[in-house]
Image (cartoon, rainbow, N blue to C red; front, side, top):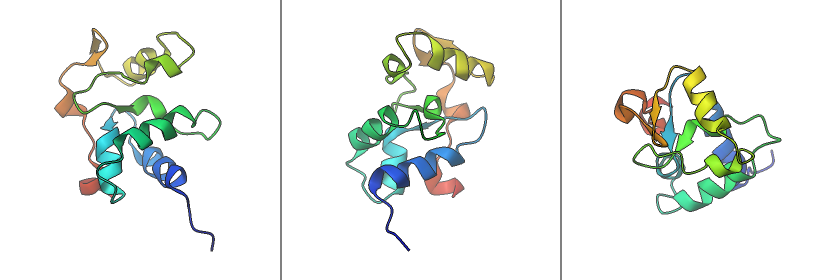
Length: 107
């Protein structure tokens, strides 16, 4: 069987994030055994548009929508999260810990 590259492993984890929940770049990196690679997870999310990955559910460690500019310069990332019942204020998830999904605990 072919070894998955880092981006593909990131996409596998991101596809597991439940509807109405979010995780962070760092949490995915840590789960994959690459704790210092949060930025690489971000790069993977930037490249995920054609891969059926819910990239809108991956935010920075404080719940800020740092990837929103990769959604076509629109508020699409915020709209997708709000459609899932997550409240956003000033580009940040309100009550972030309530919605946080930790792959290290859940997978």
